[in-house]
Image (cartoon, rainbow, N blue to C red; front, side, top):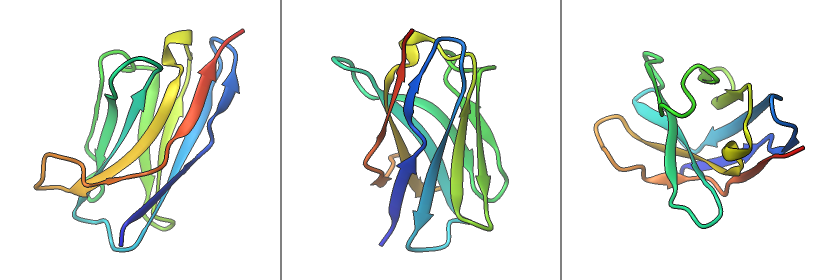
Length: 119
């Protein structure tokens, strides 16, 4: 059974940085696509970034392009989201998600980690 556990959230000042981690377990992920989503209070969940496990191909939401970087470590089965130049509008619960690379919808989700950007 696939399990995703996020960590690394917290409170940071505008302009600061945070690195989120997602520990993935339960199977091999070489044929999977991993992603980060976020949900701010009163808003719908939105896509942030994605990476294919095998080739490492990435894609980003326009709102985070150039500021966030998604990566993965195959040795530890961990996906990262490096966030820089954080803005108050980045405040949200961030979720890690996974799915087989041939499936559009994400089948597996973590419990989320809170990121708050405030002075």
